[in-house]
Amino acid sequence: MARRGERGSPGRGDGAHERGVTEMVRLHPRGVKPDHPVARQSRPMGEASYEIRIRGRVSAALLDSFEGMSSELEPVETVLHGPVRDQSELHGLIDRIQALGLELIEVRRLPT
Image (cartoon, rainbow, N blue to C red; front, side):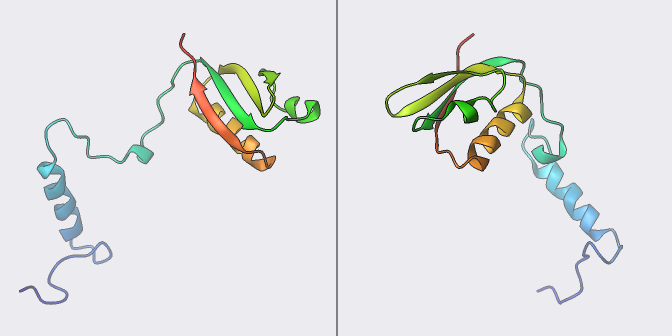
């Protein structure tokens, strides 16, 4: 049984933590990348058209804040259509919908 202090820790500088990480990386199955996805740059997805459905009828003033997106008003929801360049822009649109207090129903990437 190991006693307290026998194993290295990140703050001790004895290299035991680094050795433990190296051992863990070697245990990954072939093809698994050892780096965390957050540490990598997001891959560009290329421009795609999206359909975004919002509950309720959104006013024209609010719709103007979604530049580059066309809109349709349906009886119980508003549908936005338009190109989205990358994941960052898509997340920005979703954040704007939330910030305006709107209820997001669906986000769908349209076939090209």
